[in-house]
Length: 360
Ligand code: MN
Ligand code: MN
Image 1 (cartoon, rainbow, N blue to C red):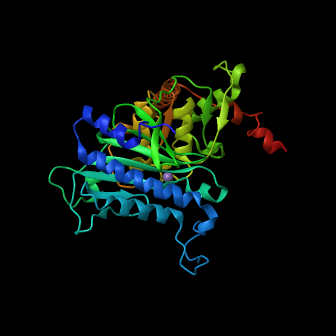
Image 2: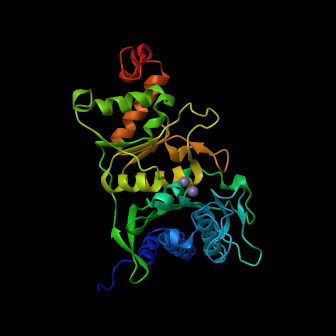
Image 3: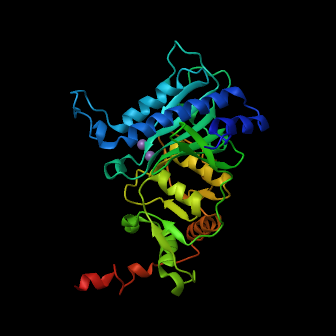
């Protein structure tokens, strides 16, 4: 048994000595990590709790079974509402912000979270996570309204995710690098195992939901076609493709070994400018990726600079190795300027998905 290892609590205290913010932020992160331990435990019990079915099911004790998304949301609220550090919370699971109950003191931070990211993967026992972002409440605000949460990602004082995979982890940043902690189940503490994560600038791995290919914009098709062409194409090297369909797991892979992840804008549902949510998905992961030397973009600008217009706003996401993200931004810019008349080889006359099909 090793003593004196760096726990998450110790690391946050040391980081805070370098920053202003102090005890309240340390205590808030402690409450968040407690919540993540509860959620890790609930998720790890899997089908044993009967909790993965949809609402309306009953468990063996005849109690109503809540979906794990709702359980995780309740855990975050209960773990973080009491401490006096928060003025309010907002979550993917709640249409409006959550008001801190009157019996508790109010604090100066706002917590925004996705309590269970990738929850459609629960049934197949694939990695899921919790994503969180800490903002400052505007001065004098004790009962925040939705507009008080509408701050750009650059305003985040802390961002991170908990990952519930083969090992449970928390990856977090206070703006001084991105650091990974692994839950040691023997002592119930997150231990610093991945200090100062760094993403290599180039990559040979990309992740995208290719079933949406026909809805993509030309710059995204161009990028993916070039990756698929591999050594024989303009990139001159072969690429691997990955797709887990769980943002936390995708971002974690990129923090561990680089690559590019994107959920770009598409024309599938013109009402939605992207798939991922800005405040509690894109912004926190963008801060983690940037703090590790990577880049996070909408394809047309830095995610952290997007001015939010609504609590549950969606945004296109392109993130990971910075040279790859820069290449995608360049392709978008060239397309927007009308410089490139791009036609995908996959959609040409005699191609796989082109006119040859119609002839059959
Ligand atoms: Mn999610
Ligand atoms: Mn979720």
